[in-house]
Image 1 (cartoon, one colour):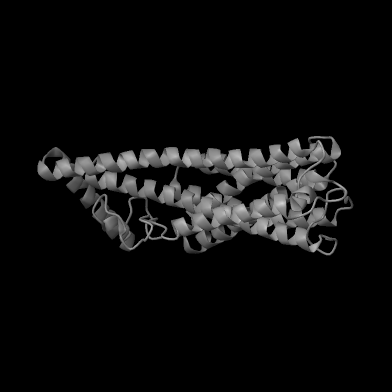
Image 2 (cartoon, rainbow over the protein chains, first blue to last red):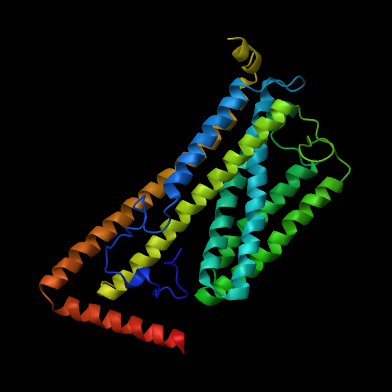
Length: 256
Length: 83
């Protein structure tokens, strides 16, 4: 957490170490995130548990049949993806308040990862729609269309960000975008909930009627997905910090 | 066996379920592969830097001067940051 400095040149404690030095405090040998290995192992275990429950524990749903098993993948993906967009907005608020570039990096990674998860939501949702409704996409279904709108909105985040050359302005504009779009996500969710159509199955809230085994499996799947999100974000952050540190060291050594 | 009979498919829709899970795992796999590729590049850069640094220590010259200039530049930036 120390290496991402206010300036790309680097001014943190880690940057003052000799080039090639490794943080020996870290049990995993990682110079940035000592808990990364533990997090990765926990994620794999959680996914194994989730898949075992989905395919060997939870019974086949009476109405939809085996296709309903997509629910344990698609819905946690959607929840984690939308949660990640909101998280990106919250981290952007922290950046705007403190002007600390670390928060901007975290916000960027959270949104980047949510976009990848969002793509998976759209693909798995289309497969489920095809199996259940006979169509790959249904335009008059608010949940689907609203998610697509959110996804397309965030798809403009990276082009907007990298269209600005000045790093300070880039970070500031990206944070403003992340805050505005992050506020749009829950509003959009509430608007869809209030809309009249109930074609899309409701999972959470008063209308939910999941039996105990299904609810338990769903919760395990949700935790596994959240862990996967956290793990991938951690790896992405570590990779970005390493590259920044490497560039700073190259400059110090006079390679560039 | 009884458990599997109650939880595994009899219908023809199992292909869709398999497709959804495969798509998801392929996406994750592609992402991990990209990360591995990036890591390989970073490792190569670190190795190159280590080699160059060792060579610079053995024979201080133009490279050593550039390194000194780089350090000075960074020190200036730090001072500016404090100001």
